[in-house]
Length: 299
Image (cartoon, rainbow, N blue to C red):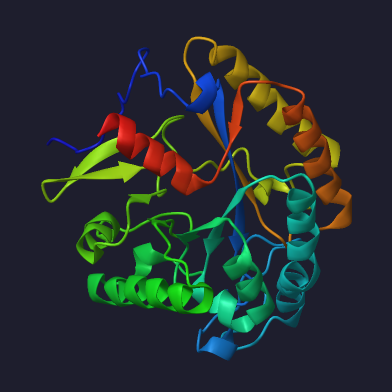
């Protein structure tokens, strides 16, 4: 039996991405806008949300709201989002928004801010739900509804797509069929973008990352404070920068307003930005910038 996976990739001979200005590393900060689109009986779900929070959920009965989890998520949209975007704006740092469409409906102030910003959008679902649990028909509907609603709320088309954690086996086919997406980030398997062939068409994959991600800010495990997060991010940067002398790479940092947006953690962003700015030949960019660069130079 032949299983269709690619465990080889670029191997020990990755291409030189030729980043702008001979940069050794392309850095993309991602802000996940999910709050208000998570699981809740309010939206007809049987279960309340249980993931990516200060404490594990899942204790409540079916069809019972978890008001604790809801409140923790609300912190992200009410306070955390504004704290971290103010840090990025103050330092003139571009970011990419991974947006769940329904989250924009729940917080029109965030929708208006994103609409007026210079930053790009990657679709993150109609809601923050698992695509791999959907039928092909339902997933197609969710992708189309998500794209349409994000565009309506922000006047910006999401040029990329990223599912909650994992796509289904139909996701890429559906994205190609849709016709508006130029890439997806439903992969964690490389330090550079790469092409795949979908329905005889070349489709761009720009991998995401879960290690350089604030998802590890949980009380039970992972990063316990700002310094640990800063240390891991800066160690990753330092090695990639050294490698970049001969083999430049891409570096994604994933953020969530309800996690990194807490004051005791947000200080890590200030320290990380200061560290990055002490180096030359780095390209801090939007995700769509990486996509357009790859399409132009490696089509």
